[in-house]
Image 1: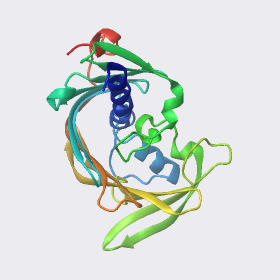
Image 2 (image 1 turned 60 degrees about the horizontal axis):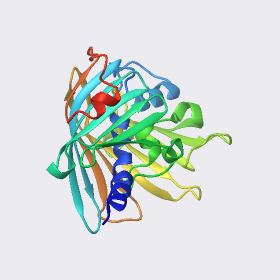
Image 3 (image 1 turned 180 degrees about the vertical axis):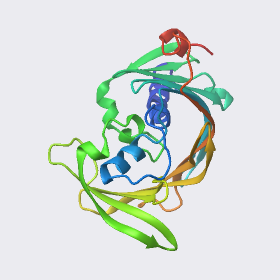
Image 4 (image 1 turned 90 degrees about the vertical axis):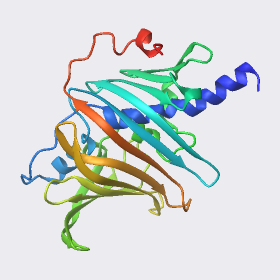
Amino acid sequence: MNKRGWLISVYRFFWPGLLLILVILPGKEVSGSEALTPKEILDRVDDLFRGRSSHGNMTMVIKTAHWQRTLSLEFWSEGKEKSLIRILAPKKEKGTATLRVDNDIWNYLPKVNRVIKLPSSMMSASWMGSHFTNDDLVKESRMAEDYTFKVTFNGKRNGRDIVEITCHPKPEAAVVWGKVVITVRKEDYLPLFSRYYDEDLNLARTMYFSDIGPLGDRILPRRMSVVPEDKPGEKTEVIYEKMSFNLVLPRDTFSIRTLMRR
């Protein structure tokens, strides 16, 4: 493969490194078991891992019918518009990083010492090789804003008290799903799983949240898996190893210079 071809392949592979944004954007903390409205429950799920800032490490495992890939990642975020993710392993990708500031996104490719700015149009595409969508990656949409919703189940199912909220997209909303069903634990509104349906209302994928326990100073799901309905045996899994919230980050954390730091 020539240099240009290699760049294109790496570019295609890593732009979804924005997946990290999915888990590091800051927001409201999970707290207690006060009664919440359906809108508040959806906002809590959308903001699950958010805080004023964050820093942590996680592992991503992608399993397909033909290959499996494991990435060790370190990430930082500040506010809702700044995030940085860097690959620590495997060795051949070490130092590859993705930076997002507002709507601008850059990838750094250490092998060729090159920074590539991604076009905003790619925000609506899917991540090659993984089972996450771009909407997962950047979280530009919000359930309570882009969908109409109502509680469709509240009670005990399979021995567990749950609340189920069914969401249908608003006509003007730029979203890819025909329906989304969110299921949370009733005692603390932490998500158990979310089912995503296509425009024909066929189940397309399920996102599972598990291993609920301490993560930083919070109680959160420490493992998240996306399982496609049409690809038996395949999934993409994210395991949060450690995470800190609301810390003071160096001023130049979200800069091109830091992006290129190996």
